Picture 1: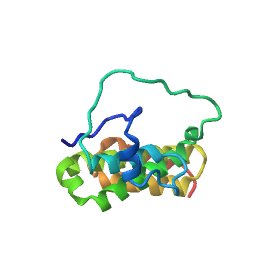
Picture 2 (picture 1 turned 120 degrees about the vertical axis):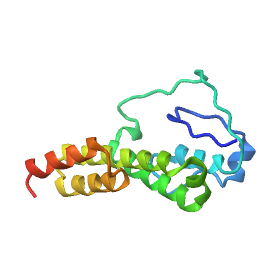
Picture 3 (picture 1 turned 60 degrees about the vertical axis):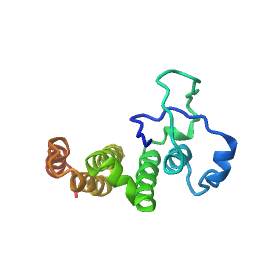
Picture 4 (picture 1 turned 90 degrees about the vertical axis):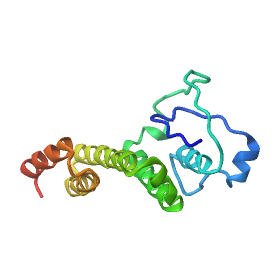
Length: 151
């Protein structure tokens, strides 16, 4: 069974599975859990429980509050996942994966735009559009940004 959770709020895995996967990816700063989840998905069946099993404490000191880093790492992890497990695109379908990556590029673009990093924002938005050519939302944003900010 292969499942793709819309929102991964938390997970519990056996210590033996964690060890068999090689543990957490040390080069990641924020999204260790997403990387681990993808590697877990490719090796074992996963069950989804549609109920709260624990709570996550959010506070000002959370490292995941850095939206730009979170989007950059999410993109990096998804692209790594698709490269290491080419069958995933076949199983999940490009119609599932491309919009997910495009949305992260779009969110990254918005974050960079708010920080007045216009060139980097346009680059991220260009990547979103390249993945979802027919997205009116991304195209509209591209048009508005092309007209409104300094180059």
